Length: 414
Ligand SMILES: N[C@@H](Cc1ccc(O)cc1)C(=O)O
Image (cartoon, rainbow, N blue to C red; front, top):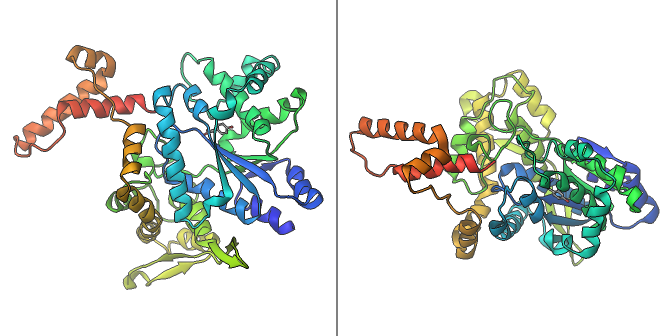
């Protein structure tokens, strides 16, 4: 039993109200009900493997797990997903999350996917938003969302409703605990404070650390394509991004690549599905991260713990190049089945195209300039320069409109 708690909290940065979990496991002796919510905004990237490994742990500990596809939240957060696209994004997220889970060996029949708007528009839920909005000050709602809702110059009211609804989700999804990144902490604390005065139970909160991105000091962000790896990036792009990732020899602190091994590759390598009687259950096997290192740098090496790897990296026994090599190979193995599924299923591709249509650049140059600003003009200049350099030899490059589309994309997405 203590085991279950250990598995549930393994690799987490922080747990609030652990006693609630203990009570369910030890006293009530029933499966813990837990949920993880995700707002279907930008394309899910490799950082999503971090919560996936935790979901594997929860299932391994016999929990009942719900995944909330928080469509209304995706809209409420500064329209990161416009209403006409959000339904497709929900479907895309569900597909790709399922593909990720299968790739790491987690059975999806033990999971429930819930779409936010399916219950968040009910009378009861709506009334709860109103009731809660009469308890929470503007200031507290604003602060609760500070690390989650995009911070803009003239904050919209929708960003204040967002944290209230996330708190209410715990009640309306009927769970004992909510799981999320430590960036959700302020919303979790808001939930703990305001559910009881509404007549609802306080929930436990489980938080995984924020795994740094591939660029120096950055976190994985949808707006910087080099900071993260898309789940559908091809093997070459994956290797290229990893090869150019920031990774100073001997420096373990803040190293996004080491964090990726710690929070994704090692835990994923431990997931194992076995038959006990008629039932398939998740068990843990020994962790393993293999680097096919060239003989001249010491030959192939295998790590079974992150401490071992960190020690070798700190003492420069393991070089950034070799680490990168090992990560590229392991990650590409994880992505292979996802890419395969995508490539071989036209409906998956169609869904992706509908969920993330290319942005349309405005027609007239004047409008382009107005909408896209100086970035557009700079891009045009750069494009012209490249063209003159190439002296028109290669006509397959981006057209001016492609450039405009790309620039407008960087402006539109987070
Ligand atoms: N806030 C979460 C999404 C979420 C939305 C609603 C919830 O109930 C839970 C989680 C995120 O940043 O992605």
